Image (cartoon, rainbow, N blue to C red):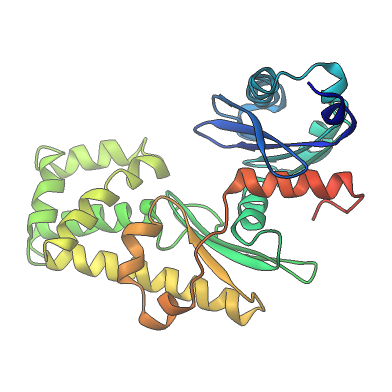
Length: 299
């Protein structure tokens, strides 16, 4: 580490979610110095386990950057974690010891929004296993939907899967015309509604979402039942995006695992107004770190 580097600040961004945790260290010019990966880091796992995953990720980044204690002490950290809106979560993480000059915690959706718009006001509509609209506008936080499957998360993979299972049972009964999608789905359950019921009793939102790729594949092939399900999902995401604009978001980005497959199904006016993401949640976490160094409030 050169003498000039020893005098400057460094910035660590961490994005922790249900599938993994990523960390990146940059210098003041935005040059990447080190990166690290680890396993899931969500508050659902508990504070200790989530923090252990965060530590593994940032320690790997520190090692790759060749940092010692002196450089870590000049580093400001921003950490975005899934589930940080749980009551008491921020306070619990802020009480943990760390080697940095400062650290700030936020929800992974907040860091995703910051990264998508380079820290400017804006919003994101997330279409993945679940769905939600989130934004930061003139100090206000926007939140549209995302109250949990099955009562909410309309237009999500889980919602699409639920609608597909429901339609498959209707097709099996003869209440609606059968189709390739509905036939394939029922075949997964040996064409036995009792098997569907047994699966339903233990199925999670993630389980329902596993049917979304099947629905999209059949919709692209012209299957009428699949097209209805995808069109309904797209209409729900249209509504989410329009509501974010109506509530003051100057720009909206569509994110999530279903954002790419669903975007062609959105209404033309919504597609025209969507903005590509500038960066990701790690970029957003680094924006938080830079703000912490400058004495800003976290969000």
